[in-house]
Length: 506
Image 1 (spheres, helix red, strand yellow):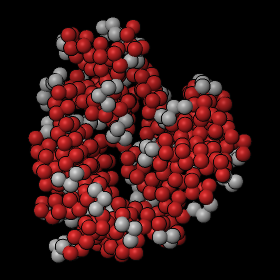
Image 2 (spheres, rainbow, N blue to C red; image 1 turned 30 degrees about the horizontal axis):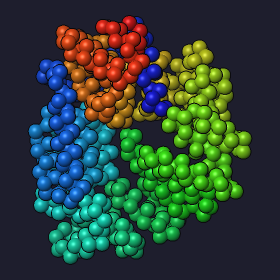
Image 3 (spheres, rainbow, N blue to C red; image 1 turned 45 degrees about the vertical axis):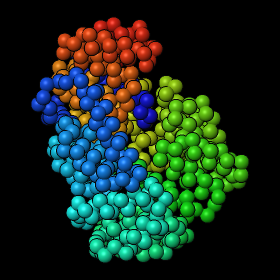
Image 4 (cartoon, one colour; image 1 turned 90 degrees about the vertical axis):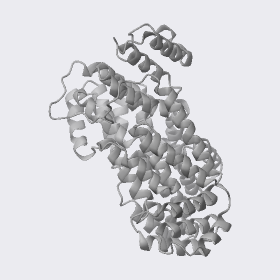
């Protein structure tokens, strides 16, 4: 589901849920417990924390790691309690190899469903077999900075090899492998990544590097074998699922023998890394030379355009792919989504049913259910959602769409979506507006705080902030927030009357 479309689903849910009593067996899963009063100056504090983090990250990238470590440490110790911020920066510090600081932030998290999924995935992906002391963490973090950001892979690898400390550290061996990989010395890269994996075979980041090394070494069967091993680990969160998918597409790009398929997988790899312009360039170039598998190129191009909100181009290329091969799953799914967006629900239902026959993915099944609902076949839709939820309890699209027919679960499922897609701003805004309607202004402040971190220029953020400020009796601030909302989105100039919401319908 495109995030741009999620808000319309959420808004319909909020309009419906006010007439439905919550199920007593389902308890809300709050993202954070707040004891302090609502602070209307959070934006100022947020900007300070963001600026502090940006400064620390900039120092890290420039290999001023000791100063960066001190800045990150100050942030970890002094930042106000905010699960979203702690989790966001904790993951980044784990990526940088600052595992002790990552742990410091993670230890400050509330113990709830939202934080648990990300912490589990982060540790499975990044963490070494044992944590190191501060001095060695800084030494290895400095090596990571030089290898990844400063084009010093060869020199840094040599320094790591000559360092007598941490001979049995899986993370040190990983960095040596990464250095050799960046220096294009694939045999030695393979040697040292195997050493790291021998010590810690649960680290998916290590396995991912090994798969890439083998793929670049033209050892296709071995690379695919490692990829199969990686995919056995079930990640719950969207971010880490996407990392695995990116590794898969890279390996398939390197191991494919047909040039058109290579372009297809390279473009998919770029798309998964949010480099859709590069993906489009690769696909458009591939069209000119494609003799085989042109339907794959067309279908992916259609999907990329669809997910970037260009429906006319999406329809053009998805249709081309479908004409060439009516069994092309991606083109059928894209056509189904387009027809649904056009409110041609009978057509979308037919396409979703075709897509279901072509794939075991949950997406076509969700599409069938939401098409039934749009066609006012509510009983069929509800039965299908209930059945799907038994086996797909952490599927984001399913959770959001199911609330159309099970609105009483809104305060249970929306936090669950947040627990698997940290950067989904519409979910945070949705949780905020639900909390405002419930009179839970402390939680609303928390959710809006998270939204601000994701996008401080989102007009909906300022709209809901105005509702929260008015609810707390701060009418002057509410008017300023509404004015800011209207400045960002001109369509809101006629909707800034006190208490009016086109999302709520009140």
